[in-house]
Length: 169
Image (cartoon, rainbow, N blue to C red; front, top):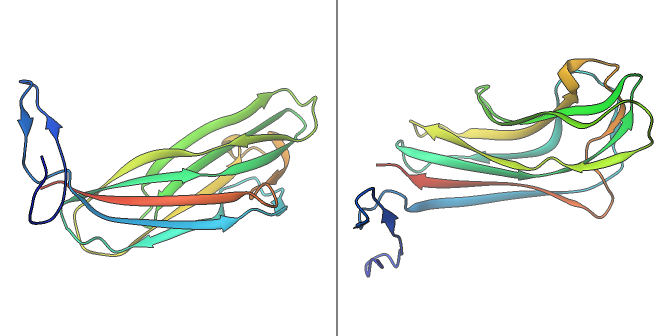
């Protein structure tokens, strides 16, 4: 249906095959942050910020924040494997998305590149500002899992994080 007052169009299918014309599911806001790629790298084993982050102040205390991150990395072989962990977390520590042991088993290779993007949902219950950020570590925080991690791979690439606030009332 199209709400003539707001111009909002939505349709929600219920279990009884009828369409619900309620307002929940309405997009309240959309925010995007992009960061240019570079050859920055580290050998740090534990979680660190990639620089891809976004701050959002919810407009509703009863909403869902859909977070999507598109990110590329370069992974150099370690002494045992060539794997990393990737996550997007909210400033309070809640993991919104996580991908573990990304890469390949074994250490017999040069640099490999991977897209570590994904989406996750954060259930919001207040109007306090939140920051969502991408983080990487060597797989399981083990220093032998990979050598260097090029965490903003590569010059000319664009790494993006997007937050959609959706009404849940």
